[in-house]
Image (tube, rainbow, N blue to C red; front, side):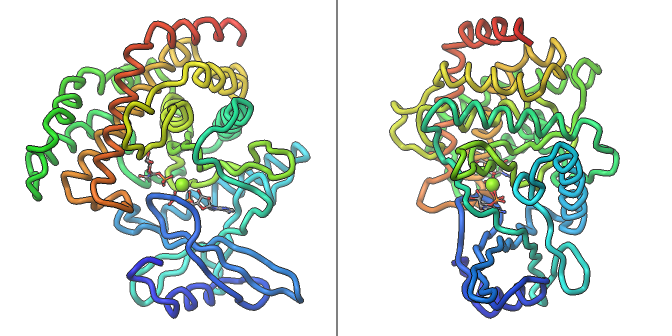
Length: 373
Ligand code: ADP
Ligand code: GN1
Ligand code: MG
């Protein structure tokens, strides 16, 4: 359990929400890097009723009220869309549980910010792709998520983390972390720093197209890693897109790229044996096919052509974010061991290097599949 959170603090937070039944237990849950997540189990007339309680990461999300306005707006919109298509709005999207005061979140006396979602039962999360069919479903689900939100009033969305995927700013932040080097770590990671610096020109490719008006700004998820999708235990189908904290205007290529980064990697994000890291071209193809199907013809020819760049840039960007955080003293991403963020940065850079080796194949796959859509 997070050191700063006592059972009393957690119980007080739970008591603020309109939950059904009497509280039985609350225990840490999931593998997210950002929020503190708890599975809350209540007893309702002998049956179990479960919820997800989260303490939002307030230093990362500086305006929890704006964040929850986004999440409440997007989830109620999705609920309507899913119901119109005779889907199950209770399982195919999150919904926000209100506090007893009718708010979307609860601020406690210690300045912690809490929210509750219904636990979507009989589901599982994947940390690694076990078969291509799962990855295809994931791609359709993320593509479909983007399409479902294509007519969402984007101007009502708050930017929960400014310039979240604006890679040129991430690059400047990275250079600042190298220059500041508060723990004197930079000298020991010079090859990784050089790898990142030598690819500066890439950082501007997508944003230049965006600024010239050549790429459309869409409502995107922006954090489409594999474990942000719940799969149905019974059907093994991708059921629900979760972790909606960064739903904001963005590029379709961000969502495509972040899924390739996490799902088409032959190894784990924090693998220490770099020989296990690489791009699985067959999974790249599977995801591309599913994403194009999920977006159902809504991507422009330039978006499609840039899909390999989306994959490379999201991987590179994540790598410089991990390395910057390692240099800064691990203040952003939760770590579970020494050098965890450095290990994560190394896998991302190895994956980028492998994509560069496989660039022609990636481009050919996209060109071939684009003819079908
Ligand atoms: P983080 O921002 O820290 O990644 P997430 O919102 O992704 O937090 O939640 C962390 C994990 O908790 C998810 O990967 C998933 O396993 C689980 N989870 C989150 N919300 C739900 C839910 N409503 N039902 C079931 N599991 C959930
Ligand atoms: C974080 O919240 P989570 O664990 O799904 C991060 C992503 C990174 C990812 C790297 C809000 O995602 O941007 O790509 O870690 N989320 C935020 O694993 O910074
Ligand atoms: Mg998550």
